[in-house]
Length: 306
Image 1 (cartoon, rainbow, N blue to C red):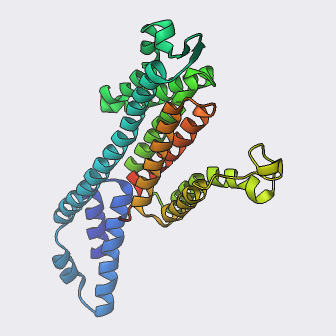
Image 2: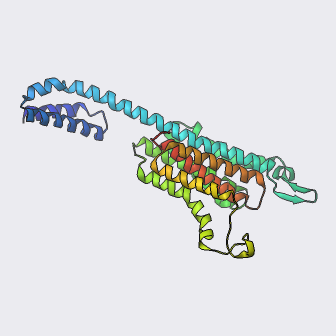
């Protein structure tokens, strides 16, 4: 066994405390140093003295990769708290609006809310999704994954059971809760949110817009058209849809600000749907929650500023 091989084996033994992929990276880097030294005609002993002892290399590697791991963990924690926190806040807002503000019944005196007709106990039921989404915040971190999965399953069941009634309004909370778990686990594993992730975000952002525009360009008959010959959109819809498509492109490129803009648009659409009390209220809530989730997921994972 050569001096170089003995040195590399000693270094590898000293690196047992770091992740295998990091250990392999250090060894590969050392091999490259030896190869360069050999090409330059330098003795192996001189190269080893320049690199330092195996203990010194192990200490430097541990410091470097520990700092990298800590930075990744901090970023993952921040992303999870933003997404899961948004799920909790949104559940509270939806619960309060659905119980106290949104017209749900037609009476002889006009319209009434859920609380006005059924009492305050309905408000407690409307806030159950918020409490479920809050649980992962209060459990120990080591139990976060299983707790988040259980909370996600419960929230999903509430939405499926509620359907087009009260439960259906909490679909955005479900989307945010599952997205928070996915982003957190991927970040902690060191996964890169690359081009595929960005393309998916851009396509999902543009998808509702394309669905709305398809009848227009396809000449599909629509009930709101002049003379019933074609589906037409309001004048304000064109710049709105154009802005969303432009933001979808910017998200695909990787601009973080585009994600924040889509998040804001989603929040506005959702809130308008909640307070409007119109026939398509649930559609607006779902659509707003869709854009809010996609935009926020992009904003907390994008690497390009602004």
